[in-house]
Image 1 (cartoon, rainbow, N blue to C red):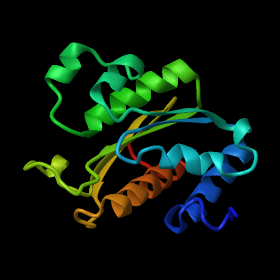
Image 2 (image 1 turned 120 degrees about the vertical axis):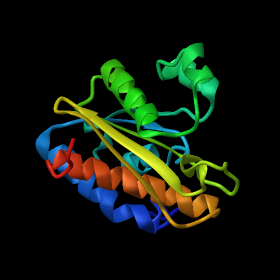
Image 3 (image 1 turned 120 degrees about the horizontal axis):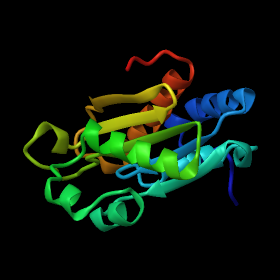
Length: 175
């Protein structure tokens, strides 16, 4: 038996309700591009009643070929790819917002773990975020501090993406 208490995860449920309420009250829409969060941002937004009024679509572009097919990437983009960065998520957000015509597009790319690389952006817990809207493309990056815990990082990435989206909607984020 399913329960609304099971999903979205506790770390996400309050912020997703806030974002959904804001979008509905303002008659605005959102689209989502995710990589390491694996669809948690989109599915959390869709778990709220009335989502069809504000959710324009979501993409989970986990692989490089999927980014060519749906994210506006080229072979040249892949050749110079050095892991998740604010430039990567900015480009994805701008591309998807143009294609889906949403008020906002939130994009996320990170290193969930348990393994990673040697550069800071490939350390488990690193995430780059972008929100594109008519005011510009806002970016944020952070490390969750959760180390190699893949699922905990994925949940935090989603919560941080939604929190950042809220900040942009409310005009509290800086370009």
